[in-house]
Image 1 (tube, helix red, strand yellow):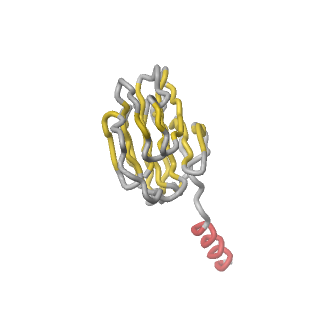
Image 2: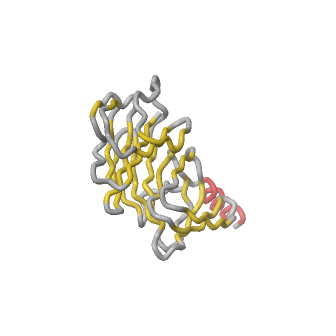
Image 3: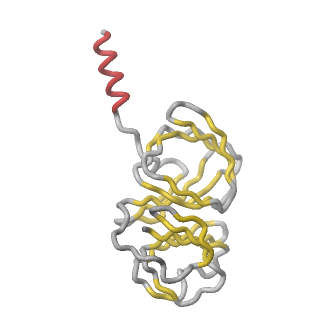
Length: 192
């Protein structure tokens, strides 16, 4: 009997954890070879333990609360304000619980492949630089668009009437705007 229990415990402990998405409250907005982009809401419920299999970045577009539960079971309340940005490396393992009456919402950009080789510095400042890491530069677009080119692949997240509108812009694209007309706010995620 002990042998059977030991074998079962081994398989439970070594079975892979699910990825964070798909899940209730998350909708895929775009997917290609480079990225998967999700519109995520933390509904008033507990979500299962999951492991982020990709590096990921994003922007919260509403304020809200949740509880983050670490691998070790430590519960940490988290209050997040709209327009905060984030970047995390793959391997984050946790569970979460939405606790707000109105759910916290964010756009998540998962980087499905390693950094692009030979990426150059931006040829155009897209507005105000918000954050930079080894995988992404996040810009908040300025109010006036002018002709520019993209030295890197980019995900453009524009928010119109409180909803995200997502566009993927391949490196080398030259244009005047990033399809952000009419948006209250626009964030550009330059992929490194």
